[in-house]
Image (cartoon, rainbow, N blue to C red; front, side, top):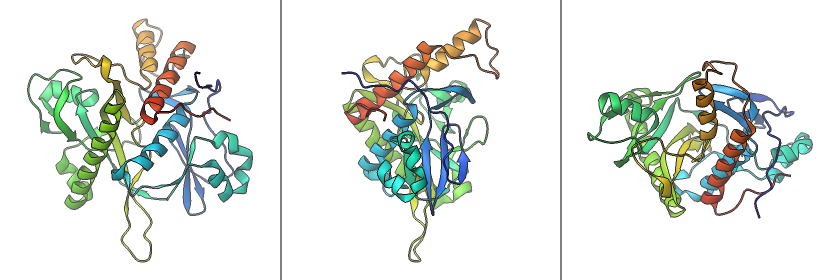
Length: 316
């Protein structure tokens, strides 16, 4: 039986807690000395946030991150405290009225100081890496063999850090620049841990017929305890369709764009609208067709089902 899918998307909540930050998808609230991270169903494409949301998207993102935090040995230590709504509501009685909205899309986390970089690992050639390779035969300054096609498997996974952009696209940087930003010892630690996370995640995905083409990780300094040094924690989301490219292994065909288990139907819809002259590539965005929304929800749900070996639990 197919899982019941909520027809309504939750694009924002107004919780009775101090709001720390509202990003493209997530909202961060202060809860005592910790952070309540809520994954909404908001959607961004081409650096623009839609008014419409994608039903179930936030619960998939939150559920997959929770799954990976618990499964990956390289994920420890991390910032997750709990994703159980009973435990979260127990920390703040004022959240009782929001229990149904929070179920499956909220995670209580340790409050961290995020590093100003993103740790990207690529096992296949696509996205901004493909654009750079076509021009210079490099990715983040790393030379690659000649003759690779879009979607090709790289000789080995590569670590390609990036700076975080407040608006627009992040900027890929060479590892030498990363060392300037965070120092050589920490840069080496970020590289090793990111590659270990990718190796574990891609092996798990491969067993389930999926290719983890590339992904990004974020880290931050957690709170120090008993006079010890602050721990380096894995934070934010982990190996989700928003932070990673997952391809169906049976459909992989180097030489062009690969179908991804993410918001690709939305990108395809927007490109068709632009090609037809109905959208100029700038805000405001055209209204989304229901078929594109449904197809996107189905891809997120498929990613969750295949990676966790279970269907997403029904919404309350």
